[in-house]
Amino acid sequence: MSRSILRRAAACAVVSLAVASGAQAQAANGTASTAPAVGGLPDFTGIVQKNAPAVVHVEAKYSGKSARKTTPQARGGGAMPDDPQLDIFRRFFGMPMVPSPEEQQRTSLGSGFIISSDGYILTNTHVVDDADQVTVRLQDRRTLTAKVIGSDPQYDIALLKVDAGGSLPAVSIGDSRSLKPGQWVLAIGSPFGFDYTVTQGIVSAVGRNLGSQDQPYTSFIQTDVPINRGNSGGPLFDLQGRVVGVNSQIYSNTGGYLGVAFSIPIDVAMNVVKQIKEKGYVTRGQLGVMMQPITDDIAKALKLGSNSGAAVTQVTPGSGAEKAGLRPGDIIVGYNGQPITQAADLPPLVGMTAPGSKATLSILRDGKKQDVPVTIGEMKRDGKATSAAAGGKSGPAAGGGSTALGLAVQDLDSDTRQQLGLKAGEGVLVSDVTGPVAARAGLQPGDVILMVNQQRVGSAAAFRDATKGLKPGDTALLLVRHGDQSGFVGLTIPKGDDDE
Image 1: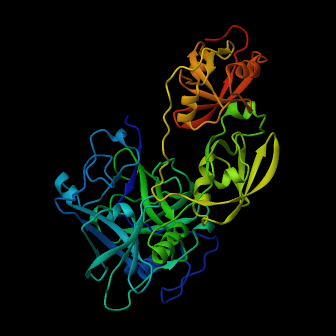
Image 2: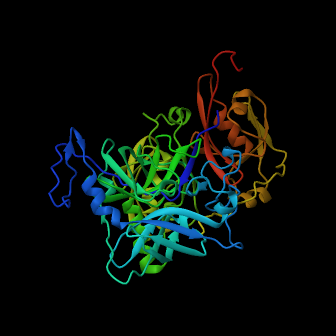
Image 3: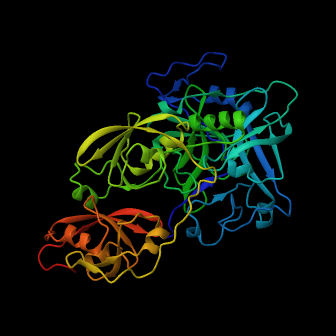
């Protein structure tokens, strides 16, 4: 059975409705703020009648020169390749019924919604990315040319503008931060090109991070609202008829709805709108650390009570984190009073913080909790860091290792340290993996060990001293540099003769 695939649900509008217990009956004119209950279930008709005119069908066209590529690497690719595992986060675009690959290259369909009466419209970036022409169709069947004012691929939000020659109906903006699992939600969109399709469900989870390299700064709203190709960019309403999210992705191994859908919180989307209007682009805060989840071995080695938090593995020189004194081995457990239970929780919070702002990190260091003030920097707009060469040279003859851990190490030479951006006396080179403990953990010759049990090692002799007291059953926590990435590895020495 093929592995399930997380996909963008282009051209899909979802309206999310949050049900509060004891919802009041809707006013006779259909404009009341809450949906009434009918036979124990909410009645969504008033919300749909009021808000459907503000939902639009979005169509993006591409010339032969700029036609979308069908490879999974293409931004917002059209046709999907035969192997669905090539790109778990690729986007796809809805067309009425089944389009040919050529049609998919020339057109993408999506949904959107009007956020102000003067013609500003929100949709997903992947619906209109690199299009030569974008048009929107209103509920009254008028078709208007839309200008892409700006977009942000990492948040997957695009701002369009149309001139309708008068005032347009607009949605009301809600507060996605107040959503809770179990609340009713509703979607209006154009799945498979069927305009103004209404679907409903509940909020399945909030603050869901999908592990996507494309969108590490978004904590999604997860729902069971049926959305499909064509719903992307549509609004997610609560029971008060307010937009709380922008429908963006589905989880599927077939390309169709399987019960799990994801929406971008409206507070994130409106922050993007504000920045695009004010300066034409979007900035994100940057702390200046690399992190990893807390595994059982890491928790055991650091004597932590739980696996909650994010382990700092690397601190960027000159960053706010370095100036605040953060160091590898610190465990971040809170950010401005919000708990950090896993490493994926932190990037969305930092990204939404204005560069130059002050923030407070709660960290565990040497088993003690402390609050650290830090000034948030600004992420480079390309979002990419420069890679350093791993270096494959042999070091000087001085060597050593640990039989218990199954590692042989040797001193680093100055050239390799320079390539890795390390200072003199930092790190020791893994020259050989001699036993099953290190091999099972994935260590390889050429890796660089920076720390052993929170103690820095800069030579083979220092590594030997740091590991000589290890006994069967002990867990050694190593900070390992592989290429330009650092991460903690916990190695537990087997008891008895069981070294598998």
